[in-house]
Length: 310
Length: 217
Image (cartoon, rainbow over all chains, first blue to last red; front, side, top):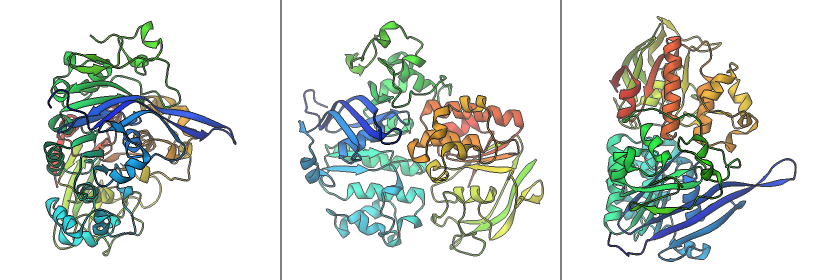
């Protein structure tokens, strides 16, 4: 990317909390995302990885404006330099901004999938062309979601995003589980094509191999915070190339690496500690880690949220 | 002990399909075999203590075979045998299964404490190792993430009566640290009790790390 090129999407210290009934009629605010910051530039695939419950899906939902009504959002989401308001979103969703949801439950169970893919802005011809590209047979358009295998349903979800036409930003929330390696790779190539045509792709995934193989940069989430942004090459190298202790622990746990987990689990939303959310599991923890919010800072061409990283 | 599928044939909607097919059931994969047959003469053998990876393209019938082996679906022809005898039709089934979609395999109207203790009472140490927090037991399934739910689904099938465990893409929705924790635990439990495992996964590195043998369907 040329330096200075304006990001398609930038997210600045996004925070999301849910107002929930605690006991009886008493309400409590549950902070689930605390500080997410990232940007997606034209022509790049930004991979987002992190634990379940780290806020990856909620980020996607916050960008798309489909959080439930009891959610409160703070921080900023900018699309091509301007705040992504409800009104702007309405004109962009399904046209410039495409969303590939995580679960096949997002398909309407009572509508044939061909019609769902055509949706509001697509055409029948575009739908047929896309089905052919994704190896969905001629009969599939007339099927209902319950008649699809997991992998077919994934491809249908993918088709809903590709049908809109002039896509500038793709937000994909776990698009590949259930696909075989060949099909997953093919889907990733389609993401790459979106990016190579100048769009930005925000790819939320558990599949680290895919992220490393096809993303340009990787954002690492932990307990509702972005802890590091590194290049895919740095992440593949692991160890000292990474900036945050959590990123290194993540890399060590991969089956193709040492397959060695660190103990413990991510703090649950609502019981997030003061200061660094990773402190309780971190081998490098000191008093300084617990003293207030840790800001995101630039380091070695990437970004990190850690007081010790050097 | 030995779990076998002998010359199993299966198609959805045809003879032999048990209504209601068990949790997570009901999808119709692309026909991988003869016309309409999802499985057309499949045989597989797992010995106690073995960990077999089952790999194959999406829609080839891996999950269907898993449900047949665990007794959730009955084959149209062929047999599933445990030490030469059919699976018991009542009582605790020695072949237990962990599904790909935990949100579809727990009762949405049961709280997690009841889900966990449906067939046995896992001890505190196991819950700790699986990272299940006490506080989660009071919650409802919709109040937990997929990864959190999956830990319950694993804990509830590790009862003392379990001899074989069918794991259908069980860590696809987990982050890698949790995946490594859960597999290290499962491998240890399998080792201690001499369990046989059938592991369905798309991840080649995981299959190589976890399994003793890889079978293509």
